[in-house]
Image (cartoon, rainbow, N blue to C red; front, side):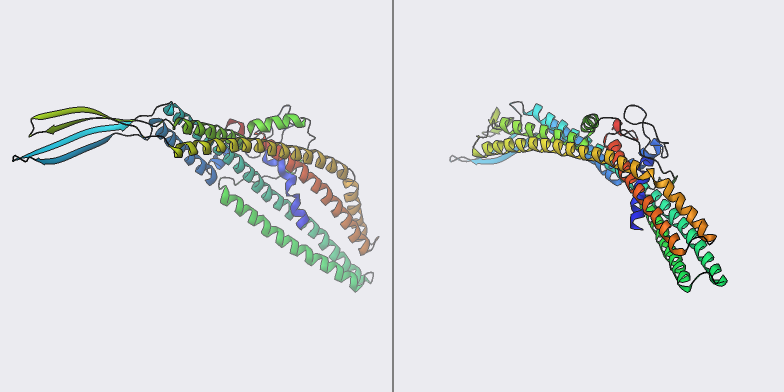
Length: 415
């Protein structure tokens, strides 16, 4: 049963509407239309979260562009008493604000734009991961249905065997042991069919809980196609379309901008204001301009050095992200080509093995072979089928990963 669950990937390419052209040898039917898929993906909580994060980044960028300096009002009221007698009620009022110098306003705007680029890359990655999840969940449902069909077919064979054994037993041509073996086989098939039915229902519930719009589940077992596009072309395409790489690039750019911002911050921002005052029993009016400038010290220098090191770390992270992706693409491509070759080899003798099992089944019904020979033939056919399907799933899953990562399906290249 567990081995048959692995056959789920034999429908991997069913989740993809493969594009024609140099990337693939043909195209599979578009079983899930792109508009429906995109609507389902857009309603995925992870994608909605990323879109809200982009909206927040837009407001943050707008705040950075206008700056944190705001107008400040101040007022002072005092009473002056003279030694010669009498009092003077006096007041002062003013308004002031800080001003960004040394190109800080431009740097803040660039930092805000980098935050928006990061948020956009996060949306692309959320859509990409959601597409992967949809593909996997949809394959799980179709695979579970395929498993149930295969087991139901095996149950039909077991039922025929049991009837044949019982008939032979009545005729004196079969032993009690044969009846027991056939009954045990039938019970095992019933157990596996029940488990397969439960697995299918569970898979459907999981899919519809994550993507409620996906309700139509057609069936198709596709054969993998050899990859004619060279590995280098896959690598370049996936690197160019990789949202994690774009995110790392934007983060490295932001870190460099923050370092420049800290360097510029060593020049403190002045605060400039104007004020008016009334003194000497309202006989004097004072008008003036105030300027205050903080003195730069060790704190600003250390923060600049910290930002410079963080920028270097971000560049190293970007390089690591690219290398890790290259390794992943290479491994996936090798898996796809290797598993395709294994599927081709194992499938060559599959038809004859399955034909032999069918002939043995018929021969047993006619009394030409014993039960042990039939069970052996069925086991050989099942083993051959599972070996071929295992190679098929490995090839199709690897090809599917390449297609999704390269943004060649469901309009992922538009994000």
